[in-house]
Image 1 (cartoon, one colour):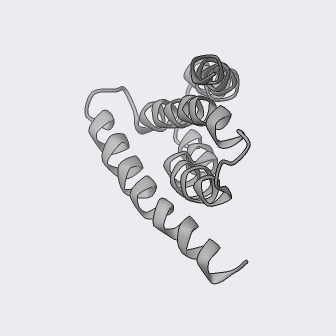
Image 2: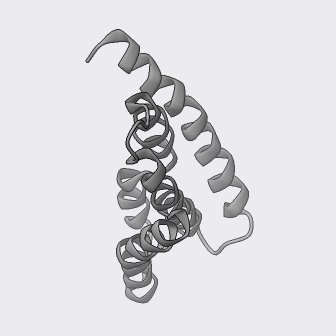
Length: 119
C-alpha cells in the first residue's frame, strides 16, 4: 500500500471509530445491553455503504474516495469483531438469535435499501 493510500484509510478510520464509540455508548444507556447499540451502528454503516456505493462506482469517481469513506470511515464505524465479542455476554438464546439474525439479515437489507436510495 502506498503512503498516500494508507493516510487516506487512516484519515477515514479515526472519525469512524470515534463516531462508533460515541454512538454505542450513547445507545447503551437507552437499550437493554451494549450489543444492541453495536447492531444499530453496524446497520447504519451498511445503509450508508449502500447509499454511497453507486456514486463511488460511477466513471470518473476518484478511487481515493473509496479508501477514505468505505475502507477507512465505514470500516471502523462498523465492526463485526466487536459484535462477536459482545455476543459472548448475551446469556439467553432468544436475544442472541435476534442479534445474530438482525446483524446478518438486517445488515444486508440496510445495504439494499441504501443502494436503492443511492441510485
